[in-house]
Amino acid sequence: MEYFDTGRYLAGLVFTLGLIFGLWYLIRRYAPGLVRNAPTGGGKSLYIREVLQLDPRRRVVVINSGKREHIVLLGLTGDMLIESRDAEPVETVTAPENKAV
Image (cartoon, rainbow, N blue to C red; front, side, top):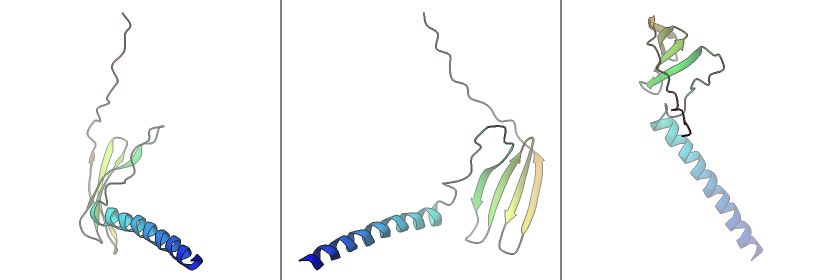
């Protein structure tokens, strides 16, 4: 009976780890841009604005550096700057003020 319980615990652990790694694989495979670096504020002016996965080996990245924007092709054999241009102004959203009447 003791071996049966230990086997159940190990099977449950393997199943749970399989679910975690399976979900991780699916996110990496089908939604690579789901988790990306976003600007956190605090005076940082360099951040990745957008990522487009072309195939498993290449991706296009839009990097924002202050008032400039750079489009870069990243691959296994090397990186290539496609375009560098002025960045579009970012609209800031402010919360409406709550006024007590």
